[in-house]
Image 1 (cartoon, rainbow, N blue to C red):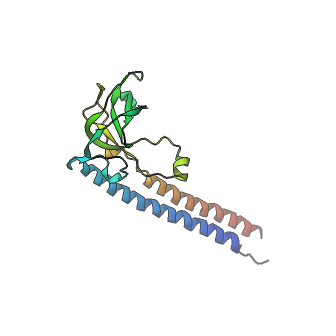
Image 2 (cartoon, rainbow, N blue to C red):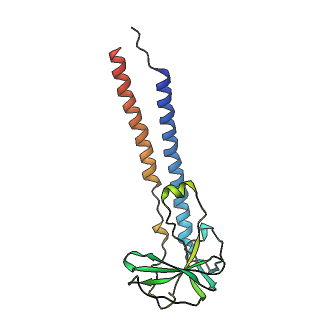
Image 3 (cartoon, rainbow, N blue to C red):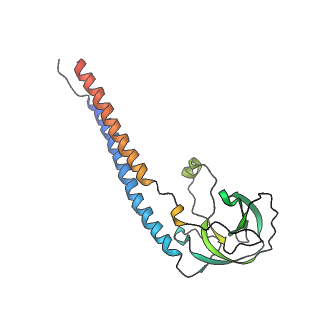
Length: 197
């Protein structure tokens, strides 16, 4: 009996492996893009202050010194801030957000009537699940992290470009491992099939 390699299953496995390898190289490209972005954002700290306005979603402005005029602050939000306790974020007229400061006690009552604020540009937290974020990607929503803090609160944790996640290398390694695993498993299955023929 002639031993033949099954054509369709082999082509399907090779196509899947090619896709996984391509995804691995895509993640390596993303790694270099993210590294370049982080370098740019590190340099932002030494740039002159800009006036941050509502509606800006340019992530290249992150970590840059900025000023704003927050009128009619409302919709106070409390967010966990790790060891700093709780951070307080308000929404200003027009939709701009300002992180006023932090408090050790999450029940701290905060009142602020608005006005001039200065600090660093950061990103408003997105509390959607990663699945929701993948289904409905939205532009970065910027906010001002006040420095000095406002409303009698303690200092904010200084936004840091190195805090940006850059796990593209591990994703690339995973895709390459998936491809190698698929080849090994298919190779073993094929050898078993051919030996039985």
